[in-house]
Image (cartoon, rainbow, N blue to C red; front, top):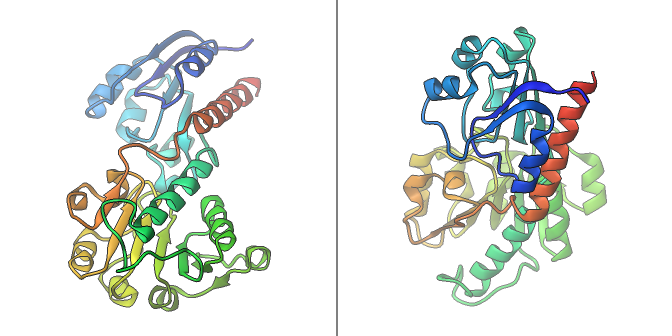
Length: 298
């Protein structure tokens, strides 16, 4: 079996321990770090002369790191990779240097979908620390807007239709097939925001669509639920919006909504990533290994 000379995971891969052990067989020497490096110099030190580098979504491999570690020929991202401009690896520079970068799609969406429904029901029916309205209400008949109609967005659209919600969406491109399949409606962003009761943002990392003007259109008495890895909103604008009665923000983790608002009474987040269940980690690991095997085979 073809192998790398040296594999280094510069941070926790988020995989289960047994899958980390399976990864190690693809290199003659393997080093897996259990903490997150603090800066680029520490990343460079950890990589050293490795030809294979593994990482999750917490650390950044930038041009400085790539140029300081000329032995790298493969970077395996144990996390989602949708577009170079949103990745925590400088993919364009890596490609110019002849380095292959691979990532994974569609491994944790089922867990996130379940989390969204469970948290909304808690808030709608008052089964948690707060209740959205003065009386418990159902998802039935509520107008739900989804920003971003990728894999997770389409899963959420299907789920909300199952609960008899009205579903509207906005994305850069219309999805006519999904509109017909799930009986959902496309609206331009400025039309969608004032229409919906619940707004769910499922966008690529570091994509901010909601600024002051958008929150003015969204109006008050609404729920914003962000399932993106990073905030989909401008922090100053969301704070102003949260100061109005009846507005709530929910998110997967503190990082997804922004640390500065997590202490507010109308902001609720989990202390764990809903997309990293044991099944999700298994799906992720299998895809990570397929990426490595594909590279080594070529």
